[in-house]
Image (tube, rainbow, N blue to C red; front, side):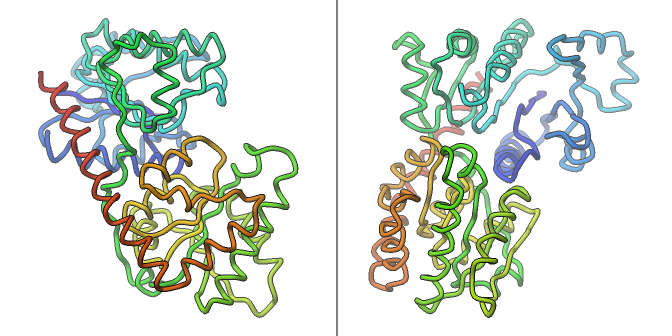
Length: 384
């Protein structure tokens, strides 16, 4: 069996966590399967140097703009393809799409168009197409609505990971569509890696900034967001706990951390952790007292390990995530400083902290059980 993984890769830590989670499941269930990805350039999301280290073979793909030229691969002799680990699209049996959050009006029309092309071509080749849990919508753009509705009709399984995404899909589909099933983010089960550096920060409070809080939440938010994080750091320190920053994604996130630190007293010693391995980052989060987070997969990593989160949002996916853990009070409006401050103070209090931790312990188990059910449904479709 040849299984292709689409979209998950090395664009960011969240995408890498999805990729590692998929690998963990597939290698446990299908140890003899051939896993493939379409390689990109070194600066792209799926560079050959990285996917080959994980044991992937390369799917031959050639595009120039919107012009698909992958058919050229059929002219490469089979012996050469085997020698270089090249797989043709027509040889793939199963496609797992793990886009995270690509199919939405927020990102234009290309991704939805490209998905429709891929699933139509896959169906012609007899492939089973499964869209793993991810966020969808909104789809007010008619082109996106048309492309997504057709793409889903060609797919075997589609998993919106929250109720808003589910409703976005249902508004453009026939309600009788049985291949759309709501299931949670599937990185919740990815195991953390604990290092000596992780242990050294046990009981501390990491802050995980996100530059999307600036470019996706409207003009004039920059100062509000920086001030909110600065206030958070000061309250954490005044409560006798020690804060530090984790850079979950880009240098733009680091710039936010540096701005916050520059606005503190000179005697404040705040570390910035830049760790490339997402499982080690999950280790840091597992050892935290609580976290202040604007990054989705950092928030998932914490909540799934029963670590309380003081969260901020730039998309419906955050509201839905906190609701999934029955912890909506953990999501704050950055324009409401008193709400943010009071939540941090409550988590610094041992009694209040214990109440929230116990609630997360119950709901984390529910989410993980739901994820296991999702994988069983995926395996059922693959094996039928």
